Image (cartoon, rainbow, N blue to C red):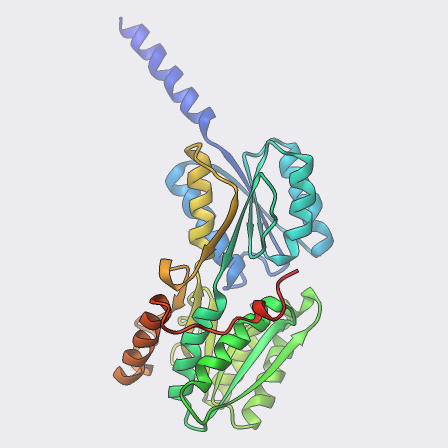
Length: 326
């Protein structure tokens, strides 16, 4: 009897181990250490690995041409869920998903419209509007800045939300620049710093960086010139305490973890998922690093605006209504 129980116990353990799904995560050239959106996705996947016992393999693509081969390799090897992070993976995922219709895919930041792909998009303009309000209220010079990474509709969406939020305070001027027009724009902190310094010379005393690791250069400039910067995607308040006013949060880690959890439980569904202020998909960061920087008046105002957006009493202008994502 004891031998039988031991046999079934071992068998049960073996089946349990075999049941763990395999997840392939493909990041763009920003990599898992970009302290921004890739880092958030990697954080969500790592949490799933720890809590759910899944097998996780991560690939950081050296350039955009490596995205499709990486996605295809995971699919060929029978991975249960293949994840692509960033708009640059739209066409590669659409192509590979068509080749492997039985494989499930997750695409962050674009809508693939494929029957085996869950596409998650965020209301970046809503979160950006909030940090724009904060910037406008904090500014002493009545001039704030925006440094975008790659000049694409997605980042223009950040800028428009931020601009409208800041301008809603009244008397605010917004200056903006973009690092570049190719994917290299996400990894050029030297250029990010150069643009930030130019904006500071134009009296900008709060600068929102939506630029991947190029934003680290913006942070350096802000620290050197004793002005404020605003982080993006992940909570970056800790990077330079006292300099980072807040961070516009875009919870890619939640989208990634939820997709893995659903696939692990055989509950994965394809289709478009939208995440905004109403469901906690975007927001702003408040913690021990930036609490001293935000006055009660600022916090009261931004929370009032947040409630208005969620209640649909305030409609944030959306760049996608002008130029939809490709």
